[in-house]
Every structure is written in C-alpha cells, then in structure tokens.
Amino acid sequence: MPDRATLVAFVSFVILGGVNFVAVRFSNRELDPMFGAGFRFAVAALLLTAVFTMRRQELPRGRALTGVLLYGMLSFGGAYAFAYYALSYLPAGIGSVIFASMPLFVVILAHFHSLEQFRMRALIGAVVTLGGIAILSNPFAEASVPLLPLLAMLASAVIAAEGTVVVKMFPPVKPLVANAVGMAAGAALLLILSLALGENWQLPAIPATQLAVGYLVVASAVMFALFIFVIQRWTAGSAAYMAAVLPLTAVIAGAIMLGEPITLTMVLGGLVVLAGVYIGALAPTRVVEPAAPVIG
Image 1 (cartoon, rainbow, N blue to C red):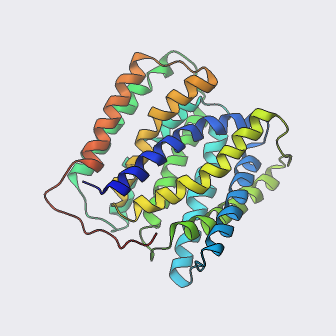
Image 2: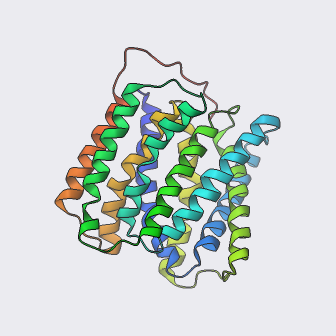
C-alpha cells in the first residue's frame, strides 16, 4: 500500500481536480478558452516561481530541464487546449468522465516507451475503470453530445497521459520547480495559440468568473505539485488513476454549482471506477516496487 503522505496527496488532488472541471466551465462563460487557460497557468507559474525562489530552490538544467519543458508543453499546453475547448460544450461531469480514460493510455504509453514492464493488474484496473466510464456515460443516450468536443476531451486525456509518462523518463525535479517551469511553457503555448485564433484578451469582469479563475490559479499551483509528488512515488500507470477518480468529485461539484443531475447510473459508475482504481493502484502486491527518493 502507498504511504500515508502519498494517499493524502492523492485524495487532495482528486478533490481539487474534480472542482477544476466546474471552474473551467465558469471561466469559459466569459473568457475565450485558450486565453483563459493561458492566463490561468501564467499567473500560477508566477506564484510558484516566487515560492520556489523564496525557498532557494534552483532551476533544473540539462535533461531535467528538457523533461519539465516537455511535461509542461504536453500536460499544460496541449492537454488543456483541448480540455478548455471541450468544456465550452460538454457538462463538467461528462468531461471528467471522458478524461478518466487517461489511465488506460498511460498503461499503453509507459509500455510503448519501455518505461515500465507490462503489468496485468494495471491493465485489469484500466479495463474495470473503462467499464465504470461506460456506465457513467449513459447520459449520452438522453442528450445530444457534440462529437467534436467529446473527441477533443479524449485527445486531452491522451496528451495528459503522455505528459505523465514523460515526467518519469527524465531526472526528477522538485515539484514546485517542475510545475513553475512546466506551467510557464504551457502558458506560452496556449497564449500563442490564442493569438493565432484571434481570441479576445480581457480580464474577467463577472464576480463568478473572477472567483472561478482565482480558484483555478490557486488549484493549479497546489494540485499539480501534488500530482508530481505522487507520480515520483508510484509508477506512472498507478499514479494516473488519480484521473479516474475525478468524475466522482466533478459530478458532485457540477450538481451543486451548475445544477447537473446526479443519476443512479452515475453512482453505480462511480463505484466501478473506484474498484478499478483500487485494483490498478491501491491493492497490495507481492512484489514491492522501490520507492523513489523523497525530493519534495
């Protein structure tokens, strides 16, 4: 079983990340998607830079710098470009459900990159998780869901999975520094894309949007540091199951804040997703994987 600190980081990430989908929906009501995402990560990167500078942590160099830049371009730039576009049209709960397919892609990509050996337990967990996603996706039969945003959210999951694998392929970097550099790289990509699309650059004026963007900035600074903390202690395939639990909090937050309905199928699907997370990431194994050195 993972240690207590890793489990606390896991749960904290899931709570913050689930509400994240709802906050993006609020942000997209006033801000153009690429600008909203780029502005969010640019401010978060500045905050993280101030913190790691005060703590006298150094910027990475060489391969470590290459790793965090690639991580940022994938996990913050590419993944959130597709996610913000998709969440302009998809309900928060459904968007999180599609994104929850990320663990399956991590299992495939980690094996493809020869980063981790094929583990049947991880694959079984991913299949069970996809079964839960299939149950949760039942609302598709009751409402018209546009195909292009759905595919965009799926692309976001694939790119985020690649970012998860990439961060394991390079020398480890302290979580604050990794996310400050990564968010800066991702923000630059998003803002360039925003300019190319001719989006309107304006700060939020509606109180609800201001609150949502403020939350997204703070959540970005915290939850991705938690993600790096976990990914450096678990395998890439196991840590990616953090994404699989996000629908549980996203559905609840969407119901409270956006009035999205909670159905019996959502509850059943959520339980199946949790079963997949347990099988793939939390269940004890006979072979104990060596823990990465504590670098936080």
